[in-house]
Amino acid sequence: MAFQETLEIRTRGRGTTEITAEVARLVRASGVATGVAHVFVKHTGCSVMITENADPSVRQDLEMLAQRLAPDGDPAYRHDTEGDDDMAAHARSVLAGSSVSVPVGDGTPLLGTWQGIYLWEHRTQPHARSIVVTVTG
Image (tube, rainbow, N blue to C red; front, side, top):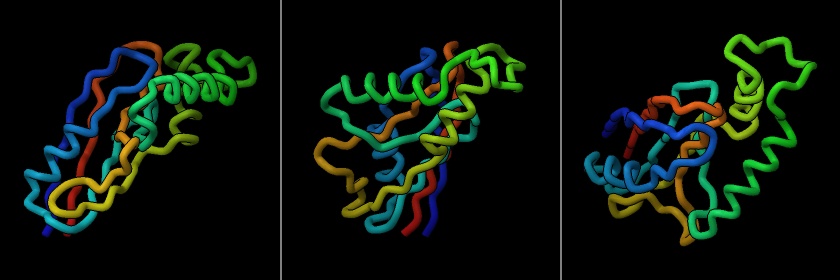
């Protein structure tokens, strides 16, 4: 059995947006009791990740690390078509990834106690993002 739906998420600009509840809702709607939920973002300026959901300082620290690894406006970048954050956003997306897979059991995502699923926007301006959730089982 396979189920697929696209979430449309509006970001506030650079930072994280928790999407755990939306993914869990789609897993329930799928009718799949045991399987896998695959979460994929259809853009190259943001990422999907599983990380700590209890202490927001973890996500703040991840943002600080991303700024160190892929700073905006680095003069070595050749790609800056959409501004100083353009190439940095692409690099951050490659580093953090565009998808995650979560096991499903009893019709729910089997995340750990302190885990959440997040859309991580790497661009400084707000964007509309499409996230495809595919549940198989």
